[in-house]
Image (cartoon, rainbow, N blue to C red):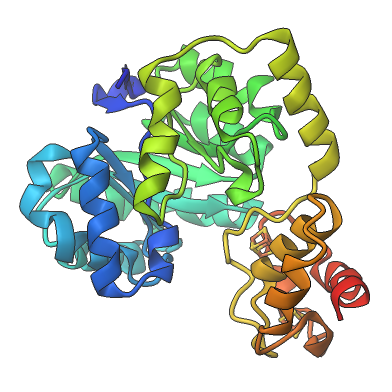
Length: 335
Ligand code: SF4
Ligand code: SF4
């Protein structure tokens, strides 16, 4: 598979790599075949996070014995120095390694996050100390707010920037990616398949490969996803006009404010699986699965109608989605 240089880190990473968020949905045992299959397929970059429940532990359990075969990135939501220092140690322990290639500030969402990280006693100091001690190689930043990421990249403190980019959300092309490229900052693409919403996987990934990204990290939780996701990078050919039109139609159907299945809104006080509700609704209302989805929805323990309107989920959603209103729509259509 094609490899691209990840900016000033100098790491040559496979252009389609492994997003390790979805393996948190597996049991410890079931995550092993997926992680090993990714390495067997030649993927050499794995991105996880402290926030992805036991994803780091699964990496440690199943592929730490193959540590020389992959570059490893993780991230932490810590904003102050002492909690970031603790998180770095936890990540090293969890992943059974003495070196993490890239440690990222996770989800700079608001200005106060950014200011806290950069301030004296902020998380950046812990990352720099860990780098000087040889525990981590490079420091990166992730988020969904383009203005804040642009500001972060301009500080020149970060070697990588991770942002959502796909054929539906292309805002990073305007300023962030050109700026990052000019400063030799690696561009890591999260949500390349819209968090699982996208149907035209081959086209969506070829769209990314046509642009000046460094690496895309689709989340993979099934062995069969791996071959499917890396196929466009093994035998790339540009999108035709007809294929571009297919993506345009699909982007219009999904719209810009869709749930990316990141799960940050969870847990829900009423035990609703919020992202799953939205997936069901998309499949029912837009993809026309009018028989299969009501049956699957009926089997859910907590349905959309169980929402008690506490609003906590909306404070956690990085996309500021009106979750409660959307759930009302789900309840209206599916019960
Ligand atoms: S507002 Fe509804 S969906 Fe959101 S956390 Fe509260 S109960 Fe759950
Ligand atoms: S509702 Fe928001 S926080 Fe929850 S999974 Fe979807 S995008 Fe993520």
